[in-house]
Figure 1 (cartoon, rainbow over the protein chains, first blue to last red):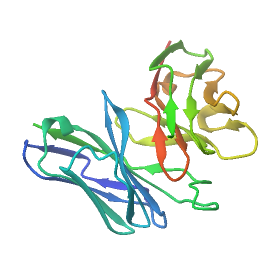
Figure 2 (figure 1 turned 180 degrees about the horizontal axis):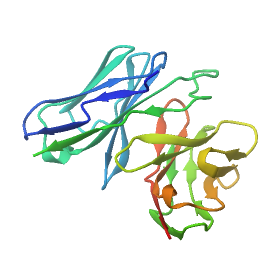
Figure 3 (figure 1 turned 30 degrees about the horizontal axis):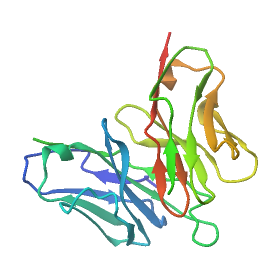
Figure 4 (figure 1 turned 90 degrees about the vertical axis):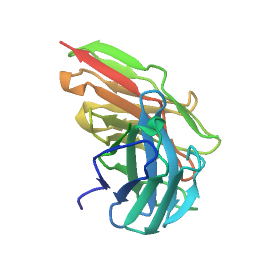
Length: 120
Length: 111
């Protein structure tokens, strides 16, 4: 498997524009996570999905952010409208949960290379 | 609530010296624990993980960590560091589904 694939690797956009980040998880993985990394706030969990269903979006900073997972092999994170403070590296990660009672165990999260977003 | 605390934001060390990066976790449920490494302009890569069993876990690149339930710690150690170990190190935990990271520790190895 090629690993988690994110596109684009770099995105420069003007304030007010819509930005869409894309992620292809590892085939067979049932969890998908979106993180944002900045110098000031470190690595923040924005949202995660289990079997394509959003489970926890409490980390999404505001209504300008939205994420979807229409099928097991694709997810998007959209920012509309974008603002300079959204500039960050956005990571997607996927994992395969095993164990009992829905515990997230016996596995690890695999990360993509990230998308570096710059909003000017 | 589940959380991870990395006590040191930056750790400078000389090459071939030992190093310990500290991590404490807090959770109302049993957790699994991980250490990830991030090299500049790259994603995160798993160093090691604790799921169950032996509390001393060995990972890649000569790193190891010890799970201490009574102290709720999962410190990362390496007996002799190399220049190439210079990177950001993240401790992480999972309780029920969510994967939560600490704020990271930058390891700076100098000659």
